Amino acid sequence: MTFNQIKMAIYATFITNFYGYKLTRAKSAMEKKRIRTEYSDLLLSKLKLRVKVNNIEKLPKEGQFLLASNHRSVIDPLIIELATQNTQLFGHWISKKELYNSFFFGLFVRNAGTILLDREQSQMGGFFADIKSAVEAGDSIYIFPEGTRNKSENELGEFKDGSRLIAVKNRLDILPIYIKTNADKELMASLKDGEHHRVIEVDIGDIISYKEKSKTLQEAFYEQFNIPKPASKKSL
Image 1 (spheres, helix red, strand yellow):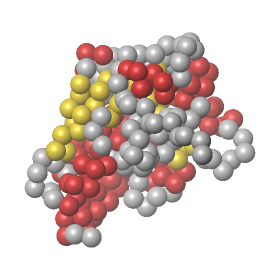
Image 2: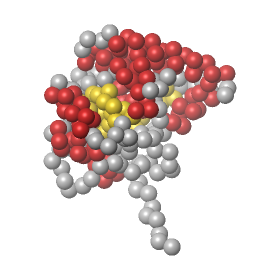
Image 3: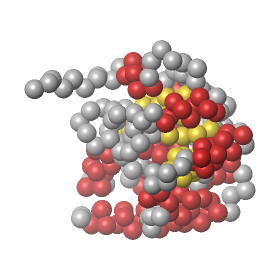
Image 4: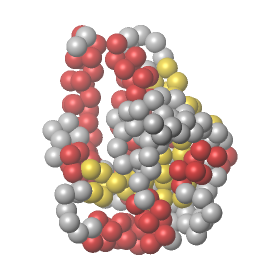
């Protein structure tokens, strides 16, 4: 590791746990949103990464949605927080069990407004009950439909079926957001060379009705954001 990487790792660990503690004292969704935004801005500014939002007029100022975004890097949630900072949207992130138990992320994730997805559980009733409670409280749900970070050369990983199910069961229209820049590459570049400012572009898509059945969510992403589809594998 370079000196800059070590320095950033120490700084990020401290800041993440500091804001994780602040979140334990938040008394409302909007206070959590403010803290999440402040944390995201502080950390990305330290990395000299700026978020530029395209088609910002498509971003609703308020309401409840299933916010769906592609996923390439560990900083994607921070990017989404900054992309939506000037709205009244507050969403509960779907979070993996590994993050809940993480020394680095655990305190923050457990208190930031998240819903635990434990893939080891045989029954998903508790997971869907938590989502329902969040929606009934007036909040949105934020999800990465790919399920995990896309480390392939393709622009999108394979979307899981759960996103559409969550939207339908809770009557949430879908707000598609596409992180156009490969944020993982920009993050790695920043950690190697912390002297230059870099821009991460985010595209806001058209809202998709939860009743939409003519195409899958992944097909909608390809179409709305003009994403090239991967070449079909030829049979041997």
